[in-house]
Amino acid sequence: MSAAPPPLAAVLGWPIGHSRSPALHGHWLRRYGIAGHYIPVALAPEDLEDGLHALARLGFRGCNVTLPHKEAALALAAEATDLAREIGSANTLTFREDGGFLADNTDAYGFVANLRQSAPQWRADAGPALVLGAGGAARAVIAGLLAERTPEIRLANRTRARAEDLRAHFGPRLSLVDWEAAPEAAAGAATIVNTTSLGMEGQPPLGFGFHAAAPAALATDIVYRPLDTAFLIDARRRGLTTVDGLGMLLHQAVPGFERWFGRRPEVDAELRAALLDA
Ligand code: ATR
Image (cartoon, rainbow, N blue to C red):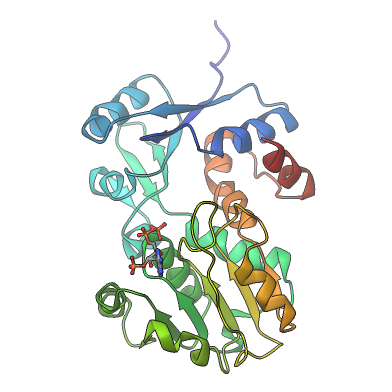
C-alpha cells in the first residue's frame, strides 16, 4: 500500500505575485516538519469555479482566496460560516469529501487575535470604537469588534454612501461620522482603527489628529507596509498604545493551516521576522 500523499493547499488570486501567504504557510510547514505544500496560483476571475473544482479533484485540502475572488468564492460555497456571511466574503476554503467546500472568513478572527496578543490589556467592550474606512477590510474589522461586544462603532468614510451601506448591513450599533469630523469622534473611544489604504507604500499618509483621543485608547492600522505608519506614530506621540497590521495577516492564516495541515501553528517573533525578510 502506498503512503498517504502529502497535504496540499494553495492561495488563489489575480494577480498573485504579491501574496505573503506562501512564505507564511511555508515557514510553518518547515518549522513543524510537515511534508505538505502550499502554492500560489494566478487564476483569472472567470476561471475561479473551474479552478476550485480542479483543486478539489487533485486532492487539495483547501485554499485561501484573495483579490478579486473573495466575494465570488462565498457565492460558490456549499456551506459558509456565519462570519463569512456577515462579512460578505470568504478568504479560507476547505474542501469536503463531496467536492464542495466550506467558506470561512478569518480576517475578523485575525484582527481580534492580533490585538489580544499584542496588547493583552485591550478589551473590545471597554468602550466605543472608531473605524476609519468602509471597504472589505472594514467589514471584517466591524464584524470582529461586534462579536467581541464593542458597545458602539463610530464609522467614518470619505464616501459616506459606503458607510451608510455598512450601517444598513450591521445595524444600530454602528453610527456614522463625517470623514472631516473623525478626529473629534475619537473622544471616548477605546479602540481606533484605520482600515483605509492611506499610509500604505505608494499612498498618501493618513494624517489623523489624535488630540481628542484618550491616552488609554488603543490605535491599530491594518496597513503593514510600512509597519510603522504616520497614523501609528501620531497615536504613540499622544500616548496611545499602538498595534501594527502585520499581526492580523499572520493570525488570519492560523485557522486555515490548522484545518489543512492538522496542527494549530504559533504566531511569534520568529514568524514575524521571517515574513519581514520574505
Ligand atoms: P479594502 O477592501 O482593502 O478595504 P477598498 O474597498 O478599496 O479596500 O477600500 C479602501 C478604503 O480606503 C475605503 O474606505 C476608501 O474610501 P472611499 O470609500 O471613499 O473610496 C479609503 N480610501 C482610499 N483612498 C482614500 C483617500 N485618499 N482618502 C480617504 N479615504 C481613502
